[in-house]
Structures are given as structure tokens and as C-alpha cells.
Length: 136
Image (cartoon, rainbow, N blue to C red; front, top):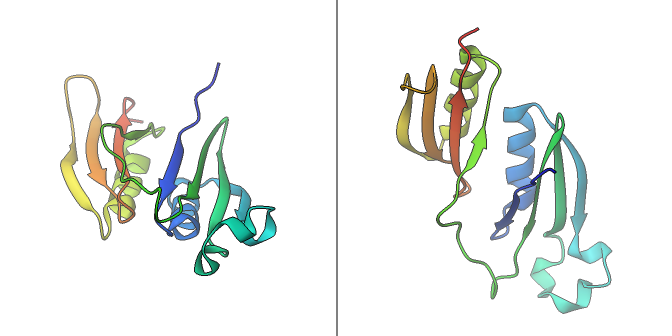
């Protein structure tokens, strides 16, 4: 069984997924605009080039998302996406990059369960936890 987070954005999905691709080293597999779907006439004209569906492949995992239409968008509350890096160098790199233009909730630091754990909300309003359990 596998769980795949599906993120909703307010018109920033393409920028967010390109940012995540750069930060996390994944590969965008799908980036479909509303204009290329049968739903093109169901969204406002200025929304047709927004993203109807995106997939970012990250090893054996994936992150999916879309731009919710303005009347349906709700900010993310009560959940965080957790990234588990292979080592602290990767944790530090990702945490630094992901927190740019965002908000650090808890600085990346040693905890009783991890060599490095930190929390942030990125520039797109997505809450993240970076949880590094291995030092090397």
C-alpha cells in the first residue's frame, strides 16, 4: 500500500512543482493545464492555463497536485508533508531551500528521535517536516 499526498494550490501549482522538483531532486511526470482537457470551458478564462493535474515522481514515491478553482480553494490546515532525507547534509540543503520565502516553524535540530528534525511552511503555503533519522 502506498499513500500519495495531493496538494491544492491557488494558481501556483506549476511554480510549486518546479520548485519541488529542484529542491527534492524528483522529476515532473505530469503537468496538465485545464485548457488541454474537456474541462476548459468549466473554468474562468484566466484559469485555463492553470494546472488541472501534476505529478512529481520522487523515487518510489510521488507528490500530486492541482490548482483549485478560486471558488473551491482552501489553504492546507492540520497536515504536513514529511520528507525523510538520507543524511543530514541532504536535510540541511532541503530545509534551507524549502524555507526560502517561507516561514520556519521549528529550526532543523537534533531531537530524541532524529539527528535532524525541522518544520516549515514553504512559499506556497505548504507545511513540511524534514525528518532525518540517519547522520551519515
